[in-house]
Length: 129
Image (cartoon, rainbow, N blue to C red; front, side, top):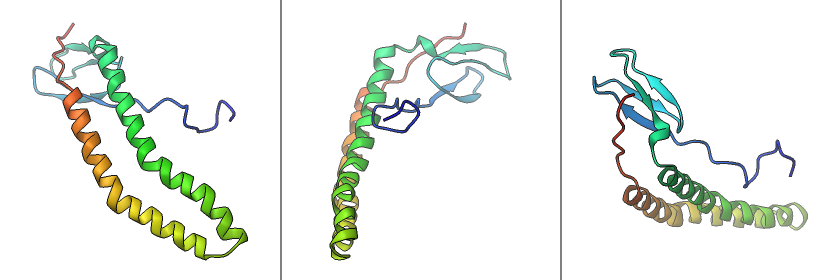
């Protein structure tokens, strides 16, 4: 895989951090960004959040994405060539398996991932600079 091509080793997109200023103004920031409130002028720095806790969230999101996309992609890698060279029954089987996975397995994975994220996420108390 070339460095510019998408792949499984690419970094996960930064999760937005919702920050609420003391004046009530909300902002969605990436980790490490600084923000100055347009209402009151206070400056906030998200790099004060412990890096280990934020990385734990990124890992759980990456794992969820792999568990929801990986198995259907692996099935497609096997069954699409079979459908092309052997017959359309393999494409129909792929359709049935991906639908069953999406309807029966993914909701369970989503519930478990949401529970995991909520258990490992806390509300960080940042103070303005």
